[in-house]
Image 1 (spheres, rainbow, N blue to C red):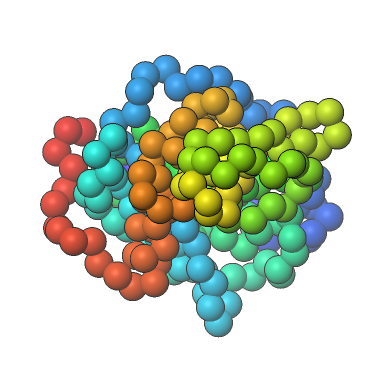
Image 2 (image 1 turned 180 degrees about the vertical axis):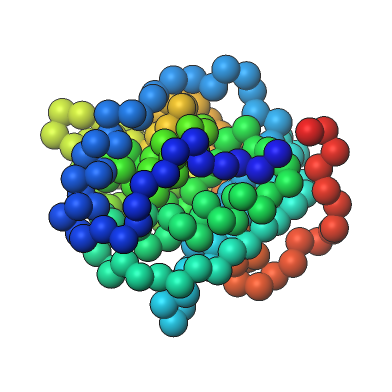
Length: 231
């Protein structure tokens, strides 16, 4: 039941080759509403230390946001740190962690960008295309685009623009806190992405799936050893 890549590409690319690959993958992005409401949502987070990428995936039920299962993977990093090309540092570890997951999420929620990227190919979009799986980017900071400040109330948002194109939303998940940057990854639309991120963040700035993925990536265990049962 693991989420496995539908196709692959080499990871040992030069920066110029990586950018060219992003431009080719860009044509494969699908923006469409989810066919059915999600029952299972997975958060994905990656940390890098001493040239090792540690990816964590945590599966939660939806809408009650109960953590059910976690998987992790550690992969040596060979690609240099270059803004806009982080998928080539973090992607292999993410794919390995997803391959170890027993349950099958309906949507992947990344602590990363999706289309809010200079070539529309943040980690959430890159992984969504390789997996051909619904994915959403929910980043803590802006990588690309311009925006006004959203109103202070929870649920308020403003468009994130690149010229005349809307590439994401700047969403206030809690009243008075800093917003998050939400963008389509693959096989969702922006309205779905905003609604799902907000539903997954009932009390904190970051959505619970991403909060749990960050905690697991840092070595914390889930509160129970329960496994999903409806797959």
